[in-house]
Length: 615
Ligand code: N01
Image (cartoon, rainbow, N blue to C red):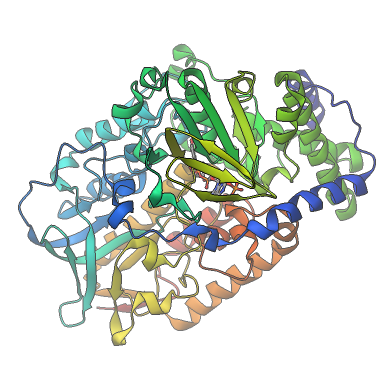
């Protein structure tokens, strides 16, 4: 499709904002002022580094398991131990079986496969990314997602289906937490111990960045003093609320409810709470940008007509279109892509097919303001109370925070029983026995729901909950004290045969499932080669690791100006640009395919370049 044809398509989807973006300075000043309002509240210190014990133990308890682990302690010698049974663990297990490796275990704290989708069963939960590119192995399984954006329960069920179909339950060790891990130089094996008394010796171990694993509570004094009911969204208590993932929270009819947090989770849960609670107060710090959801049942005929290999092509196309605006050929036409196309058109209008850098930057900035103007107009059109509407408008560049897509979030605020409190400039003071205090106002409630996300900005080992003893007396807690250090995001010196996966110095993509797919394949290539060629140990050379760290630092610098102007959040480590403990801010800048191509080329080269190999 040519760019001008794209423009016509784009115009059909969108509408015209009332304000034309002419005065860039007005927008710059307004956005900076909003960011500054938020700055005094910023920093990882505003979150509790929760040790889920004492009064807070309940916040981490597993509401979904049928009781504690019953499996007897396991002692095993394994080719591989995979820590984490979400998409990554499933993908790694499936890829290992494809190359004939079966002597491995997949270990998880949860009682089943699913990872994020095991834990997050709050009402309204759905994937944010088109399910056709989000669910892994669709071509292999022939599974047809029921909707464009399926419910979390469908994703969880699909994870279980993958476990069954690929025989992974026989490899699983659930309800088990790693307690420590050490490298034995003489046998070239990791010894991993767990809270279930297991002793697992493994040639290779894979771990994850644990970006969204440990619930995060806000650093508000008094969380533990509240005498009503409270829980984190990833541990939803249906016994208290009634209902299930589809809603029907009937037990809330006579309850005064508060929810803290309006990120992607809050945006999905709030409409459900609003519908059933006697009253709902939403405590919002930074609003989320809300574009239309446009969900729809899957056109089964269309799905069945997709050509062989469509999955990978569609994912790649999404990644390219969402992150690299230099293409007009997009298979996915969702909110992410519509925004990308909108910007692409603006650039084309400003400078044709070959704009200057100035034209490009100007058009990108201008079109971003314009896009947000449209969405702010949409808030006004939907939310009838102007005071509430004002609080729901976003004043930051679109990709400063993860955009939200919803058709029922904004209308929820039209209910008289739903109030919204802006805690940007006046943060929540404290939580008392009976409610939440902001400034001189106390909100008495029966239930507090924490939609406050997952622990970020802590060291890798803090989040993992265990330390790793590698070669030369090196501890991972020491090596990663100020941020991860890897080669290509996978391996780290002094910690041989240990793979780090996820956002560990890899790349940032909107569809994490695509990253997982590439990383699982890449890791299994390395493991397969080692097993086939009798390689005992691999770790990066100091030079290769240092070079990758330099690359990552250079890429962080490229984002510095952008991150400085952004409102604090996950993507800029709450505004602390030089604190590299958050793995989210430490990846290659730019579209994911740059990283994926680099990995592919490295594999095709088949020389383990940059890796010290011990045979
Ligand atoms: O967590 P979050 P989430 N006072 O960290 C607020 C992804 N996801 O569970 O923005 C008041 O994003 C905090 O405020 P602020 C999602 O994209 C994917 O929503 O920091 N408020 C924010 O509003 C994300 O990457 C899907 O100012 C406080 C909220 O709590 C990850 O999962 C679906 C506060 C936390 O938002 C987690 O999302 C759902 C305080 N003291 C989620 N402290 C998909 O479908 C924190 N907040 C793929």
